[in-house]
Amino acid sequence: MDIKELLNYETKGHRLYNVRRDEYRKNTEDDYNFRVSPTPFRMNKKQKDEILIIGKAICDYMDCCIELYKTDEYIKNILDRGKPDKYLKNIEPNFLFLRPDLILTQEGFSICEIETSPFGLGLAEVLNRTYGHAGFDPLVTENELKNYIQSQIPSVGTIAYSDKVNAFSGQMDFLADEIFSGDGKRWDSKKISRQSNLKNKEIYRAFYLSDEYKDKDVALFLQEPHIYIPNPTPQFEEKALLAFIWDKRYSEFFKQKLGTAEFELLRKVIPKTWIVGEEQYIDECLPRGVKDSISLSSLGKNSRKYVLKQSGFNTGSSWGEGVEFLHKMGGAKAGEKIKKALEDKNHLYIIQEFKPGKVVHMNYLDDNYEIKNMDAKIRITPYFSYRGKSKGKLIAIKVTGCEKSTEYIHAGTSSINTSVIEDEER
Image (cartoon, rainbow, N blue to C red; front, side):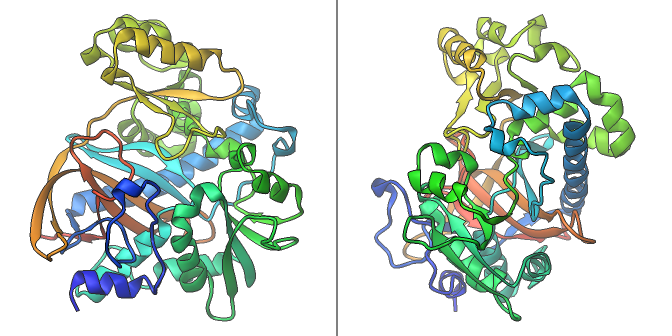
């Protein structure tokens, strides 16, 4: 069985991704809509070890952010901005995992955000199984993800997703059938609707809380009594969390809590990031001596390599929809974008230093099973456990190779998706 046939087999009949735009839809019967590599992505030992260290550091960092939220009025006020009263209850977050999105750059890994949603998790597991059963030795051992998830969830429940994430419904079904269920556990997955009959159930939340503003079914669903995993704590699903490591008021706090080594590692892998309107607190100066975000627009494009992002709890804060590359536009337009973010007092926005992806040669199989070559920018998405004794352990990982012509790192039909192995010869 070749790799494409094996991948189709491992999907267990679940359509992993339904392309949202018809012009990118393939005329095939495959259960996936992306390019397939004949081999996993090869990572040397140093890279593998650093990813494992990043996992522990990110979990420790999230713990610190939660502590700051509980003890520091400024952090609480910032993260509560724009949140409805129902989410201001100081509930302890209970994420199953954390997923730092890593860009492979010439200098190493760069974290562009920390995700807690399951979109991509099913694909990572399918890829891990596929290449493992093809004779490779993936970084994550077989059943690692399933064993961890089942140790942390109740016996019966539903993975609930919104219409916005319907393109991932096949992955939600796969997770329910293949990861959440088994050994006496019975889970299903359902799209939230008035006919879904999801009252008083244990719910794994596979949707964004801000979906309620565009989806009446989600709004009604959130009014019903449910026990959620993760808890409805949108404060800790903000990209703004990455700014705190660069806030000079909290440097000593993080050094003390994380230790010098973890603090310096996070300063190395998290690009300089700040909350729009809070520039006075950034440790180290802004480029060319500018004093605030709006002044970035006066710089030339080569000096304006920064990205403006909607931080979270916003209808445009997911899947690259609220990402603006300030060096890809003229100064006037960049100024307009920043000014609009400054004027929006109901949401958080961040500006993050842009770290260009390293171009790597990757192979894929075309429709005729011929090996083709593509120059790709690499996005690595490792999932780390965030609960129990195994906290910080790698439980899933995949690599996405995006075409070098784009700055966006979200997977598409033209992307290559694959698993990861350690290359002992590199």
